[in-house]
Image (cartoon, rainbow, N blue to C red; front, side, top):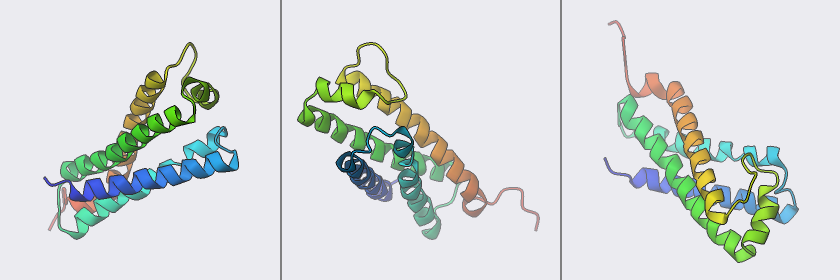
Length: 150
């Protein structure tokens, strides 16, 4: 299995998330939790592009496309978290992290930059699985014919 399409669409997710969160930061809305949740639509777009492209190229099989979908979203997530790590260091490190983590899902105790990013990695892995599985439920009859009677 070649991952050219997965890397390209994962990079599109990364760029989309980067632009989205920078716009939130510039407009001063980065502390609004409900706006952070909308990033799922960027992930859905990138993952759907992968599955749609596989379908157009004749790549069949539920699990093949599910793995491609998960790989796409995880590539976008890993690139985004790595760039967030660099951004946090650039913005002042732990001081900026305290401001950033105030309105976040997980928290409490003393968060370090690396614990924060690992928490984001687990959260994005769960979201990647959920988005990939949900989209495959939509695409399953198109990528694999199961139990069809002639």
